[in-house]
Length: 482
Image 1 (tube, rainbow, N blue to C red):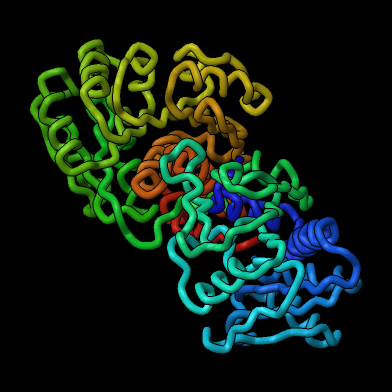
Image 2 (image 1 turned 180 degrees about the vertical axis):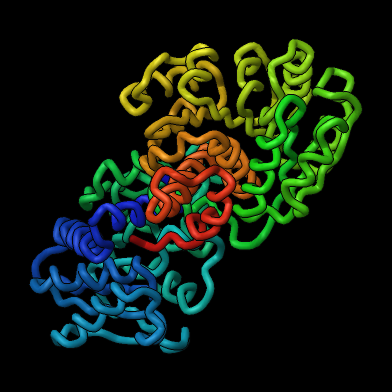
């Protein structure tokens, strides 16, 4: 099962793998036409009611496979406002080839022809809520007509973006289309099985790799549209560069502010790395249980995404403090470096993303392997037992919540240099303010690797982690549709 938002990301990943969206649209339209042929008799009248998005584009393709029927394609809106190039090309193909087409620019002009089958292709998975004009008028006419209704992907007005176990999964607008048949693509959308309709899942040729491997669609799904979020990095003491790198990476990944809570003995040094950081000192030379209550109160009050671990060290009192923090925290946190070792023994209400390297993963009780990708199923099982998202760092990164698993193949050998894991923690924290845990972790891993790839084009293996800071924005916002 797959949500509409995730489906859009998979489409984009498929394009990046070399399966263009135009090819997928051709397969989708063909699948819709097959369903129409199953419910219609030769010569029946078919009315295709289409919107200006790719959902309408699928229907434009379907019309070309229905020559044995008396078919009319009705576009809701002006053809010059069709939203995507591939949908526009398929509309123009109908028009140039002499198929019967109409444009409806005002709801008062809409008239559903007397027909045996209606194809609902007005709104796809990206639209939810009550239908607006002219779709509302069209939906009312479709529902009142005595015709079999075939919906493309989802019935118009159906919300396909809620998670399968969410209360609002499958919400359907009161004025939405009531379909008899639904042809959905690649995988079933949450809530479709609850409709009084026969649902067909059509294989349209999306490779499994588009879901398994992280790509530009995952990045687009997780990245913020605007600056938002104020990650709270709890780190430093024995080491100072790690929390500074994590905090700067969060800023480069779109955070509006980045805070570092660190021992007063090193706050000046951490601040010296970048004037953009807000460094908040606490007493002492390392994190101890005495500071935990204040740190938890700050994180909870401001609802910060926390990064805990960079540069903390592994002193017994620091690990005890880390354990107490995670037990008390109820928000979101990225756990890295030495802080990882306490996670298996902690019971917490917090939502955690754990970012171990191969050695840290084994120390936590996970598989001990040099090939993380080959051990992906074992890592998934470990994440399920642990109850938290795992982002295992290696030549290929494995990201899993114990149910869903993705692999990021971006990166270069030059990223073995120290500090790249701290950058990753900061990037993930910035995305975690906007996206779900697994989406933030997957996109963060991919972006971090892309930043390294961009530097490797000119600097080979001679760059350092701080150089990568400047490549993060391009890696995050410079992604194309592939």
